[in-house]
Amino acid sequence: MLTPSHTLEHEIDLFVYWLGIAAVAACSAAAVLEAGRKRFDLFGLLVIAFVAALGGGTMRDLLLGRTVFWIADPTYLTAVALPGLATFWLAKRKPLPLDIFLVPDAIGLGLFTVIGTRVALLAGVHWIVAAVMGVITGVAGGILRDVLLNEEPVIFRGELYATAALAGALGLILMLELNVDYRWAGPVSYGVIVSLRLAAMRWHLRLPHFDSGKPGKTG
Image 1 (cartoon, one colour):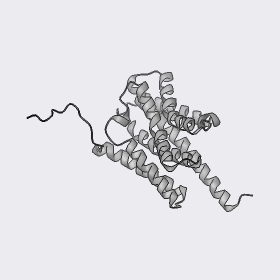
Image 2 (cartoon, helix red, strand yellow; image 1 turned 90 degrees about the vertical axis):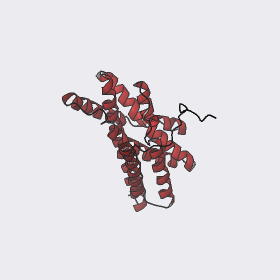
Image 3 (tube, helix red, strand yellow; image 1 turned 45 degrees about the horizontal axis):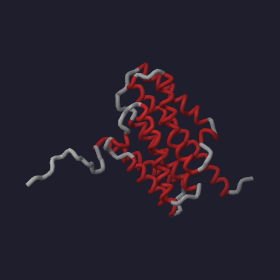
Image 4 (spheres, helix red, strand yellow; image 1 turned 120 degrees about the horizontal axis):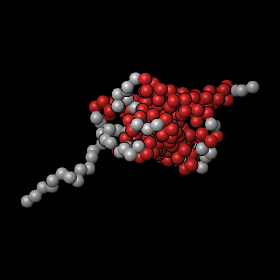
C-alpha cells in the first residue's frame, strides 16, 4: 500500500510522464508544419518530426549517461507518429498560415525545458548543469530540424528563444529550492517560457545584435 508521500511522488511522476508525451506531440506537429513548406513527402515529414521531437531529449540523456527516454519507452515513438500524421492530413485538407508552426513550437519549448530541467535535477547534477540540460532539451530538436530543412535555426533568428527557456529553467529550479510543489512549479515555469516566447514573437523582443556591417566612425 502506498504511503501519502509515495502517492504524491507517483502522481508527480505520472504528471511528468504525460507532460513529456504532450511535449513530443506538440513538437511533432510543429515539425510537420514547418517541413511542409519544403514540399517533403510523408516519409520526409515524419523523419523531420522524429528528429525535432526526440532530438533534444536524446542529447540530454546521452550527456547525463541515462538510457535514452524513447528507447526505454517506445510509447514516445507513437506520440510522434500519430500527431505527425494527423497534422499532415489536416494541412492537406486546408492550407495553413506559413508561421503557424511557431505556436506549437513555443508550446513544445516550454514543456521540454521544464521536463529536461527536472530530469537533470533528479540525476543529481549541479543546478547550473540542470538549467543547461533543460535548455538543451527544449532547443536542440528545433536546431536539428532547421538544419535538416536548410533553414537558419529559430534559436538564431532574433526573437527570444533559448533565453526564454533559460529563464523558465532557472525559475523552476528556484521554486523547487523554495520547496514549491512541482505540480505548481512546473506549470508556472512552463507559463513563463511560453509567455516570453509568444511575447517575443508578437513584439519582436530580442537580445542585442552584433552587426559588423555598420560603418565605423572616421576622422
